[in-house]
Image (tube, rainbow, N blue to C red):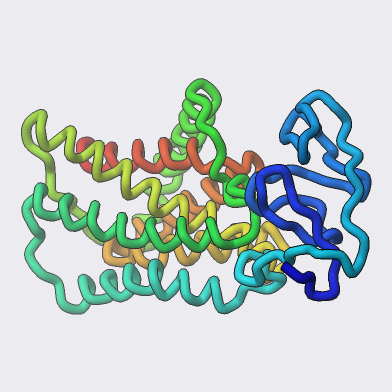
Length: 287
């Protein structure tokens, strides 16, 4: 293939990267002009993993392939973020408004759980696809290899902080914003409790993937501020929970700030998914 005027260099994983880039979009290997920075991470060409890579890039004007334009990292992904919001947060928000102005009888627990799982899978799939095509490593969006002890410990810390703050602030919030608590359909029997765990696990993954894993890094790119990104994602998170009442919406906003802050520090969504699912399960069984 003929180059497009820019020098390019094929990574060991087979993908072609532009010479000016320092990281392979696919495998995450980091390069300098001299070669692979961390030889233990990836081989280059026919080099063995332990050797220092020093294969020079091809000279300008030689036969080279260019990185596909649709996999190059976007500088300001406004359109991409708008599409994700239209696919995910906007329908959730419209559903919440509908529940407020045209309330309907609650569905039975099993039926409600079935529709919840399907709806969440429908938003997980396109966001995973967009992330895979983003031109950035999965770790940029907090999708890293799970570590049972670390993720479990972090999830416990997040749950403890969230539960403690909720207990302290709820009396004050309900005093300022009185209203009956939202009543969730209750599971009955072992089978429905197992279904509850599945439902809240899928829901926790969907919301943390979108609101924290995807949106915070993208909003950081657009706003240039981690703090603004956390606040904006938390407002969006609370916006589609307004059907639960004003007091619960404020509590969920606070939870969003806590979850967003932990994501900004750890860049891992696994502990957030565990904590989110735990809160969801607790909300159903503790009433």
